[in-house]
Length: 413
Image: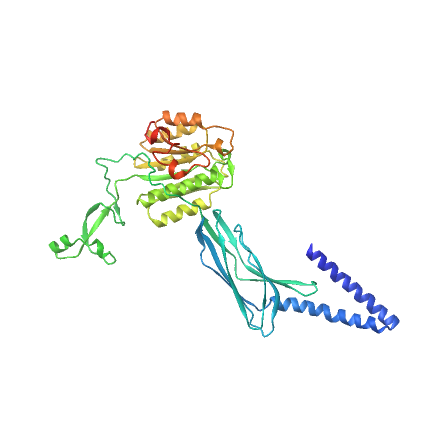
């Protein structure tokens, strides 16, 4: 609309110029000549004013992070320098950002060879991937005839990880392990289980040297470690679009993502192997691993999760269930009320896979269906089940003593 008005104003000035020029030569009236000269000079000067104001600036953007978590702040500093000996006034600096609540515009003026800078902080309230930049500087002439813009820098993005909470007492059924619960598998991580010694190699930590063996053999010997006698954990998030309810932060989708991040962190903090699987806009599988880098990978997967999938979770379990063996515990997070989920889970348990279900009570989020029938079947099938309602304190609910836990978190309750 503004562009249309500016074009109309330019057309009007062009008509005034033609009319005044014609009348000036027809009548010889001196005022018309002067008015014509003003138009001839003012319009080009206005164009040059707007063009000069935005050109040749030194604009820098310093973004401190490209990855952060909900509840943290995204900080950035914008520096604008005028290298010219002429001042720049009425500059509108815009930093386009998809981040909710991010300040985007500021009007500044710069003296000759002066600079200004400012810092912005945006509270991150929603997970996801957000585009930011490039910085655009705009200026208009005093009459509003021309508006010029120029972009500085490139386009970037920031990944906002979902929040997680502490689950100090969250428990799942242990997986079946052979013999006395030890299965031998070498690992580069330091664990409580030393599985032997070997000769020191370049790069080994001095803290792993076994001094007794070193004194006995006369050579530097280091300890080798084995994996803890604990199962692999798979966190499976149901992103089937038809079973979701609620909106915004108070939706089954966001509750499921938050619970998934919290469960993964709980087990990774205990140095357990954790994997992640979901089917939203596509199949997302992160193979089991441990450590802080695995937590980052899972958080990135959850940040991008969208409950737009068209594959029911029971179908996902049936197709991908071959990944899970006897040393596996599956934690399923779902808001579905389809009783066929029980069949898919029983197929896993018959192969020795241990299963726990975090069942989101969708009718408390606004859905019309109740999970009570599914809950009863899960209990009868001897499957650990946590029931989560909208507004629950998840730290309390996802514990053996949580009121929403069926049968005091005992298997088969």
